Length: 161
Image (cartoon, rainbow, N blue to C red; front, side, top):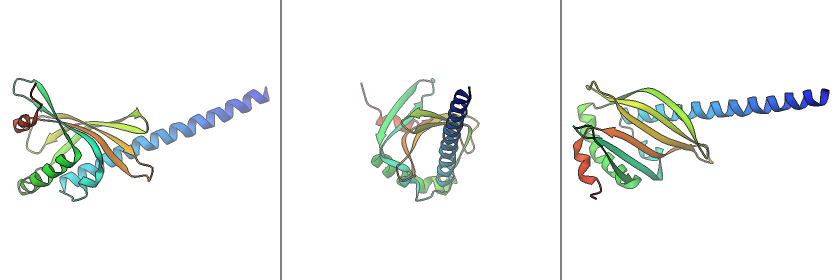
């Protein structure tokens, strides 16, 4: 009986430790996301370093009729476009606020951080998510990002079928 009780206690401790580590990583993923939001809203030059060099970037255009069109690009192109548009956004004091922030494990140590994004001055909210992953050196990086937008200009970059 003592043998089974000892095994049960050890398994309980291992499970508790594992759940605590899981909860810690979930909170770290959300903290990374919040740091990203602060950097983006302050036009920080550190934003490009928050992305994996081979991240998948998706802009999901919400057409006036409600249709959704995905426009996908690579990290290098996205960073180049971001740097160009950043000066205009800064001049307009453009920022985003985020609500309903959740982090869910998606496997292989990565977390999907989902939220609703509200552009400054707008009443609507748009869906967004980031897949973030802690690197072996402990740094978190964005490996995939999807943000909905009502900006129809992105449609010119959509693949024609």
